[in-house]
Length: 234
Ligand SMILES: *Cc1c(COP(=O)(O)O)cnc(C)c1O
Image (cartoon, rainbow, N blue to C red):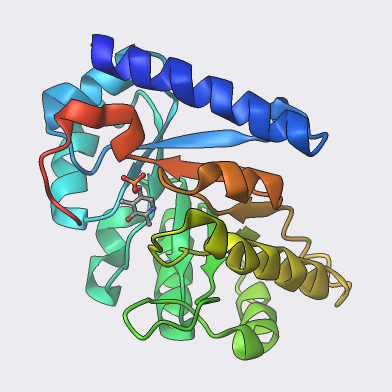
């Protein structure tokens, strides 16, 4: 899969450069290869290339892939999740990046209890306040986080946000900076279950800036899979 390798070479260089600019260790940065644009065979190739973390955003697309490849990677659910689909995700996806409401958290916890597993979750925050975006609003985050922290099977590993798509990418920087600030605010609550060490932020168009602002997980789709992208803006 030459295109994938080519894409990754360039991305890796940019990751290192971004880390270097702000004195961060590239080892602290993790990449989720977003495979939602890809079919089963292409997703397999992504794993063959050496990516460990794969991200999917739609249950109906993801489950058939997981049934074939689930024993190979670590699976991240990154899209909006309906409550009635939680049962399909828990036990398959080790990470949920889009925990954005308490009713969802309760369902995740219930299903995880049945399976006697923990689920690593990011709390999704709608920093930019766009109506089209999911996520808890920043001023409700602390309350939400405290409630989620009471659910035994949920391990709150961090915060996640999606920046708006802007012509001038630099303008998304305040969104990432704000997520970092919210992380620090949560950490000051001094709740051992809310250490939230991770920030899941940055996609193909803006990952350099996200890294400069403290991302520890970036979610990359189109920039990696380039020509394989099947047009969908899922
Ligand atoms: C699709 C998607 C991505 C990857 O987007 P690209 O712009 O293709 O890199 C990242 N995060 C979420 C939540 C997504 O839905």
